[in-house]
Image 1 (spheres, rainbow, N blue to C red):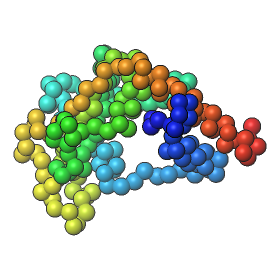
Image 2 (image 1 turned 60 degrees about the horizontal axis):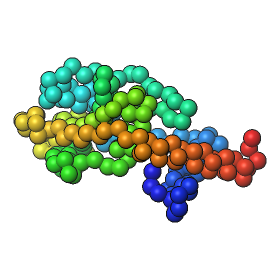
Image 3 (image 1 turned 90 degrees about the vertical axis):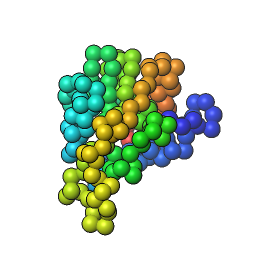
Image 4 (image 1 turned 45 degrees about the horizontal axis):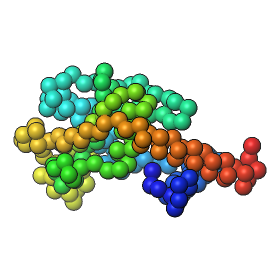
Length: 194
């Protein structure tokens, strides 16, 4: 979502992303998401949701409803009547954003803004959760105490950011998607692909 050099132009990073995606589609390969942090996020997500339930006295369950619009597709982690939530599991005490001002990223913010569009919700919450890492994921050289967190107070193990729906920012998302589609068509024309 970075701005291009001028209005109506994709950023260099945006063009690079489209080229990478184009190669995957037309050369027929997939990048495999890997790494201990990603594996923790995938295999221990339910534990993060359970931590949220304890902290906020809720009964959240993993959302299984994927929304698909003409311009985007996504699956938020938690779908409530008035909002959505997305859970990010920190790798360790060291990487956990204990303070709100240290949490968040523009990538995650735009992800949540897209979810608000897809699910037609006025609010979204980004929840950073600190749970004990499965010992099988921890490299031998990494101190185990970085991953032992169950003795910490619950309110120090979740950092939550709230985002409110912003239709001006949503129009920027739509504009960028249209620019990305034009770039895609430009790449197709370079190879005479119909």
